[in-house]
Image 1 (cartoon, rainbow, N blue to C red):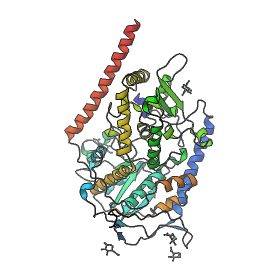
Image 2: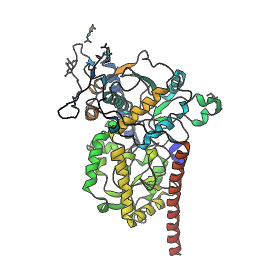
Image 3: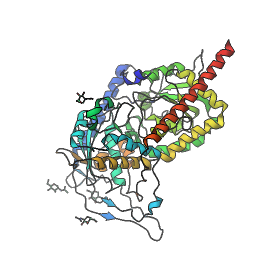
Image 4: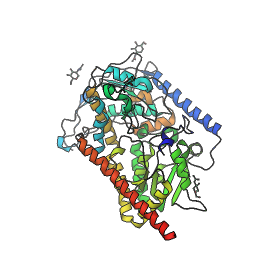
Length: 517
Ligand SMILES: *[C@@H]1O[C@H](CO)[C@@H](O)[C@H](O)[C@H]1NC(C)=O
Ligand SMILES: *[C@@H]1O[C@H](CO)[C@@H](O)[C@H](O)[C@H]1NC(C)=O
Ligand SMILES: *[C@@H]1O[C@H](CO)[C@@H](O)[C@H](O)[C@H]1NC(C)=O
Ligand SMILES: *[C@@H]1O[C@H](CO)[C@@H](O)[C@H](O)[C@H]1NC(C)=O
Ligand SMILES: *[C@@H]1O[C@H](CO)[C@@H](O)[C@H](O)[C@H]1NC(C)=O
């Protein structure tokens, strides 16, 4: 179960995405290796080009408030990318983007409260709540970090330490640059370490007792119960260029349209999964449940072959067109999988194989309300029961699918993803006990320095996800932290719901065995 995904490094290449993709016969391993290497090499070289062709530029001090009194609504001025090469033959950062933006004219009561999952920001930052974060702690997080992010006076500087898988680092940094464009003058000065790999590494067990005040703060995409890494939205929210997954903002709209094309009742009454089973033991185990001549667990599995897909223009891998089954299986890969949001968005019932990792938004999901829990040690029977239950309780099943897609459309829209980043960075910066400074050799980055020299597919996604102007509204208002007891109750309640489902499941299979005897 757990062992497979956590401890055994399965067949996974640096260039291989950790989810989705399809075909029964893959190309020979050495071809994959070679292509993986090519993709990696390409993404690396372009990142270095991005860094080397940019030049530091001082923005003018500008404060603007734009309101159109006649229409009583703010007038928006857009600032598109300016890739014009300056007189010195270098890509410069624009000087006309506002460095401060007042939204004080707004009625504070019109600002929404952030979704519940923002409350986990306090949980993630708890290790530093009393003593704060010293420079020494940050430096110790450098061990596994791919880059250091420094924000000073609204500008971002990157000190790059090592290459990341594919363009994870580039698109993560891109996302941060967009946050700065969205909220100019609002993101505080800070320094942080970011690790773009899959698995959390700051083990709680190493920071007990006298060491509890020495936890290195390290940002990454996912966490688990045994670690203290700080979770941050992953690169795919701005697009996953290598496998043609669009930026989240555009994809959300596509999925919404896709959902209307095929109503839940008309969808195939089976559990669907499409992905790369070779990244984790638990996924290989799932393959046993596929329909065959001799068995039918109501499971329909498909292997996604990204290399074939890329050759055929990604025709079969559009996630917005994959909402044609009533049930969709989510199963972790090497760690968490970015596929979760695409699956939850479908309006289908998400059959969630017991996860071991969380990302920034998944901790507020509730079993039976947002998804149906699936055992990881007896997957086929567990899924078969879930499908059977859903097909016999269609209204209830559809309501679960709807609750998940509503959650994704409303609470995980890009506005809130940016607000999550804002509040996380803001709360983090409050804890710093030193003055952030730009280290020697760090590179100042703006959207132009990343996007202008990028290759075609990356540039397309960057242009698509560009924040074109400052937000006319303030970030949402942080909800209060969980009372320890309330959080305990929340977890206990979830565990009880899962146990309840397991009881129903056992009863169902007992009754079938009894009938057969
Ligand atoms: C920048 O803006 C602030 C606030 O509007 C103002 O007080 C300050 O004098 C400005 N600085 C420069 C160099 O223009
Ligand atoms: C774009 O950048 C070039 C070179 O830095 C500059 O001359 C030009 O004025 C800029 N255009 C706009 C619309 O800001
Ligand atoms: C262009 O380069 C010259 C000499 O390197 C420098 O003095 C000048 O400031 C640069 N101009 C701009 C706009 O970067
Ligand atoms: C504290 O940290 C040191 C050095 O990292 C380690 O050797 C020691 O075992 C830790 N102590 C505890 C109680 O975890
Ligand atoms: C699962 O079975 C279906 C139907 O026979 C088949 O098309 C598909 O390729 C199988 N999937 C895997 C991963 O073997």
